[in-house]
Image (tube, rainbow, N blue to C red; front, side, top):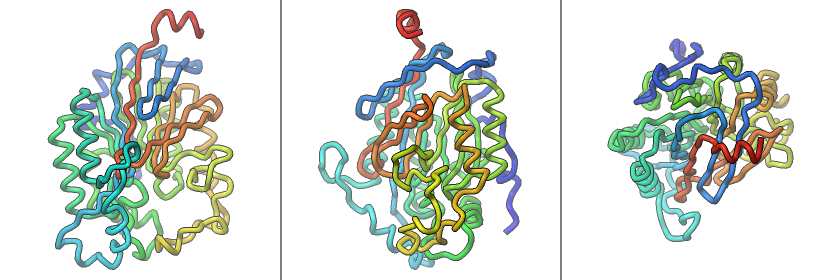
Length: 339
């Protein structure tokens, strides 16, 4: 398949639905590490940041695993059968009551609307497979909210299990055929969104790997000096975590891949991560203007501190989970107390 130009272009400043860079970006370049206080209280996350002037409300969604399909999906049932049955009914992660992915997604969007969220971040596995019916339903629900959103794919969003081909090619194919409208004209593999002085970088690591263009894109935005937030589906490796924290994990390789047969996909490489992926991991945690990382994938909330950078992972939205994130200016009294 011949790739379209949006898979290779790096985007320095993109405008999504209601996310305008010219009106929102700060002009002040940051040369020193940004001072941040981050706190987590169940689903609520607070980032008090010295360099921002206006509060930002983010509703963060990962791993909804919508399984809805229609007659258009019949030719692909050989590939979608297992995941179509995986999350038909779930238990709410807090209350234990019965729910399901569509209900959980609608409740989360309703919360975003009630709280006047500035943006909804959808960071992968919103779908259990690339169903046209599911994608159309999500687009309609997002449009109804009127809230800007950022989307990047997870490994299930584009994966029809058992379909042959390299993961990168399969990702490109199903992004182009099905997922493309969710990107609002932006580069599916890497895009930047400026919101009230913070630049959100959405980088697709749904193959567990990072390519050279994505690394260059990240380096370019670090060099800008602007306050950055990184959005990835698969969490960045942290010492002591499982292989599912795979991006940059030195133990990620063929002999640790336990799920390739179940998921009917190629086995992880014998040699493990590429040098580019490992270099990306290093660059992320050395970036002085990176405020934090938000991820999903593992269906369990967690927080890791890596070289002073907080990485916060959301519970799965299929079970009602989401993150209610507030970026807030730092009070003068707190500046005096902490700095």
